[in-house]
Image 1 (cartoon, one colour):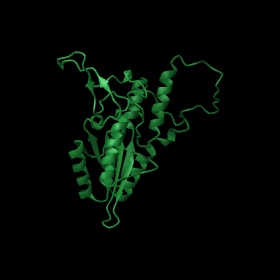
Image 2 (cartoon, rainbow, N blue to C red):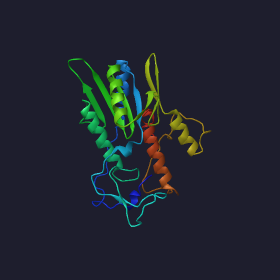
Image 3 (tube, rainbow, N blue to C red):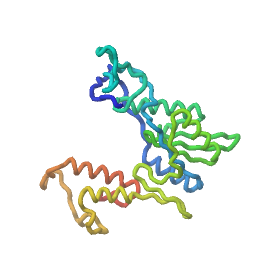
Image 4 (cartoon, rainbow, N blue to C red):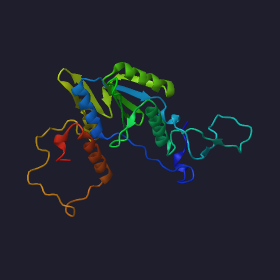
Length: 247
């Protein structure tokens, strides 16, 4: 069941909608640190994450089809957020942050999706990174990590995905030398969408001496597809910084 969030009116049945997501520089740094420290990267997924957020505003909706009520004039008052509501992601994030704080984690001021737990006495050092409903856990104490997983499962129910292999389009592979990240599948998807999977590779993607102008040349017939491509290529930069200049 989802709500028709497009019917919501600002300051009446929703206020804030923004929910922080992890910075990609933080993701890279986390992978680098875990590689240097030889820590395991545990990946979790929260089941039905948005349903765990509680609403602060009064939100009403018509009963869903198939739900019989004695008075057709009655409506449902929502207590928890549903998928589709504008504030659903934010309310879930607030609930998850509260639990991590209760478990002893401190939220980073540089990246609000990064949480750190450390104990000077026992030497325990844990890191949790959240991206909507995907969570990455790492640190120097496996028993403590298992306890965190148990606490999360009791509160929300989680899906333990084991060692991190695929995260936000990144393919992650650990070997004896460290951790290798790549975007192979993501890059192939871009080529397939553009019907360029059979194109030839070049060492220099731009002609030498090329001069770009904002007021000369033909306009693109479909600028939206071009902008979408640039956005995807910018994301590809996460594992391919050598493409930065061309992009």
